[in-house]
Structures are given as structure tokens and as C-alpha cells.
Image 1 (cartoon, rainbow, N blue to C red):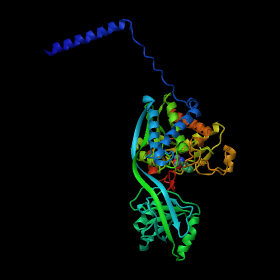
Image 2 (image 1 turned 90 degrees about the vertical axis):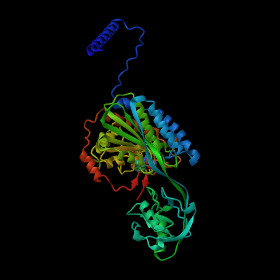
Image 3 (image 1 turned 90 degrees about the horizontal axis):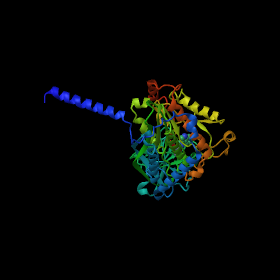
Image 4 (image 1 turned 60 degrees about the vertical axis):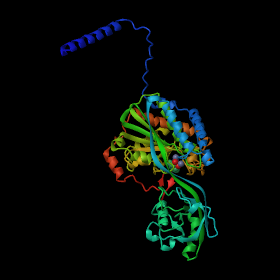
Length: 512
Ligand code: DTR
Ligand code: ZN
Ligand code: ZN
């Protein structure tokens, strides 16, 4: 068929379609079900989002989370949400399911990463005729040979045991006594292993007890204990006098490599180049259900994310539930390390919410300063201070010392901060006068213990702090006006280690 004719026919059919459409538009539309007009969501504002937060809803979630922690009982004989347990897998399912119910308001992602989990089932240290009370098995320690007690003479290692020549050939087959300091517990244990030791005892450089973690497993790690300076002193004196002291070391423990999961939820709407990010950790320690640490943060985030879905946002809001925080901030470390420079720059600020409901609480604000942390950290700090003051409440500053999931962000130039209500520290008289509660008692006496359950929560502090979380989200979801811009210089300063404080912690675990 000639091309001209094809075009003409095509033209006719288009004309025919247009006239048919015009006809149809003339006729009244009948039998059409009118889909309800989709009402645009109101732009989020702090008061409205805060008003949507209810302590009853939070407590209902806490009860659900405790039931999930009980899934860990078969393997651990008590409720736990430690990574790798059914309690943690149940926690991840609970979070993901709740977010998925919000439809396409969020774009959800699961970030899988390798982690290490250690369990110490039993241990015993005998030094001469004494069983020192302060002896504790180090985190991620291997077991003694065949998971059985081993006997051997004690040998006091020279200096801090950080150099190979601190270990004489006679160290082989001995139980080594090593002073804390200069290098990590893991490095000391590894040196002991290289020297052929059967076990290592690291004693504190001051009087108190010593518990920490060996960190990333090494084939040369040996069964390692921590010991208080007080318990070590008489034994060190005997060894320095030339006396022989025999010992028995026993640790029954396992160290396993597993894959675990961060959950990330980002608003589908909102400027993706200007994200406000916030996180809490989804895991607990093996010892207990972690309903305050950090169920309180996990559930606060989930409730705020749920309520936020009723609003529009100008800027992107990204929630994160970190795994393996208790193993040393592994989930947040992995996440930040995986960011490209552009993805890094798109995060305007990271807010950490870890322990928001301690029974003997103080309203604690991380004392982030722009002269020591990425610029913007201080403005975030002051947002918290101003909000507490606006409620007629006081606050205390706590060290911004790298003990929770903000650490990787500030080390990589992203402004950070957060609030907490306290862990194993003791409430001061002054704080008791301001916040009530009991001076001289831990902020959370059930920290890292089996009793960190629903009854351990201070519901008033939790509801109030969750409203503050809502305020922090709403503020930046609306606008970053007045908040310092991100700069490449900020990232470079961080990369030069400007923020690598002399921190001794990785999460809650001491490592040096
Ligand atoms: N929530 C604790 C880690 C932690 C974060 N900030 C502080 C301050 C003082 C003690 C402990 C912490 C945990 O995950 O164990
Ligand atoms: Zn925590
Ligand atoms: Zn903890």
C-alpha cells in the first residue's frame, strides 16, 4: 500500500478516535463510581506529631516486644533479643511488618551484614589457692582447650604485653598475667596466643573490676579473663618476689560468625538530598530482653514512623534499626562504611535514640560540640536542650564518647547527637533533686540484665522522650533552615581523625 495512503488511513482513524472521544465527553458520565478524592496530607508540624504520641500505645508495643523476646528462651533459657536468637529475628519481623503496613509511605530496605556473636556459658579462675571474685570472662573470648579447665604456672608479662618481646620463651604452656593499657584486650590475647600461652588474665590498671571485649576474633586469641586491680595486686607482688604461683583457668564459650540485618525505612516523599536520619538498635545483650536497652528506642522510632505516615514532609526522613550494636556498633559501622560520598552528603544529621526510659532516669543530652564534632552536632544538641526547657524541664549533658550508634556518623563527617536516660552510671544527689528518683542508684539498675523487662520502663520519661523524638523529626522534615550545610571540608576533617576521640568503648563494650 503506497505510503501516502497509509498516512491518510492513519489520519482518518485518529480523527475518528478524536470525534468519538468528543462525543463521549458530551454525554453525562453514568454508572461511574466516584473514587473518593485523595485528601492531601498536611505538612508535618511538631505539635501535631507530638500530640499523636501516646504512652499507652508505646507500652502496648513494649508488651509485644517482651513476648517476642521470650522466643529466645529455648536456646538461652531466658528471654533475649541478642543477634542470632529467635528473639532478635522476631524483633526484625515485628519492625518490618509494622512498617510494611504503612504502604508506600516508606521505601523499606534490609541491609544484611556479617557479625560475630559470642556466648560464655561458664568460667572459673583459680590463682594459687584463691578464687578471685572479680574474675570475668572477656567478651568474644574463645574457650579453654576442649572447653575444659587447664592448669599451669602463672607468668607475669613484662610492660603492658603489647610487644612480642614482652613474652619470654618460658610463656609457652603458662597462664599469663598481663597489665591493662597501651593496646587493646584483643591485641594482648593475640600476643599471648602467639607466645604459646594456655590462657591470659588481663588485670585492671586501677582497683576496680575489668570487663570488656576482645573484638574481632583472631585465630591466636586465647581464653581471656578480666581481673580487678585489687585482686591482682597480691599475686603480682608474689610473682615479682620470684615466688611460683600455679593457676587453673576454665572458660566454656562459643564465638560464631553470623549474618544479621539492619532495617532502613525512608519516606518515599521528601527531598532526598536533605535527609534527617534517626536510629536505635534492634538487638539486646544475651543476658536479657533489652526492653529499655534498646527496646525503648526501637519502639519510639516505630511509633513516630507510624504517626508520621499521616503527614507530608518537605525533606526525606530515614529511620534505621541497627543490628549488632551490643557487639560493638557493628550495624551502624557497616551502614556508614557502605555510603558513597554523595550518599554521605545527603544525610544532614543523624540522631541516636538508645535507652529512652530508664527507671531511675535523668534527661541526658549528648554534649556534642561543633569544635569537636561535625558542624551541626551542637545545633542538634541545643534543639534537645531548648525542647526540654520549653517543657519546663531540666537536662544533664553526658559525654559524646562513641558508646552508641552515632559514632560512625560523626567519624565520617555527619553531624550527630541524641538523648538517653542513663545506664549503669549512678544518679547524683543533684540529679535526684531535679529529676526525682534515687541518688546513688544506677539510672537503670537492670542494665544488661534479665530484669530489663516492661516493668523496668519509666513510662513518663519514655512518653516524654518519644515526643522529643517526634519534635526532632518534624523540625527537620519541615526544614533545615538555619541548620549548617554539609561541606566536603567537614568530611575531610573527620577523615583526618579529628573526631577519633581516645574512646575506649565500642558500643557498651570496653576494648582497651
Ligand atoms: N545503650 C548502651 C550504650 C550506651 C550509649 N550511651 C551510653 C552512655 C552510658 C552507658 C552506656 C551507653 C548499650 O547499648 O549498652
Ligand atoms: Zn543500647
Ligand atoms: Zn546495651
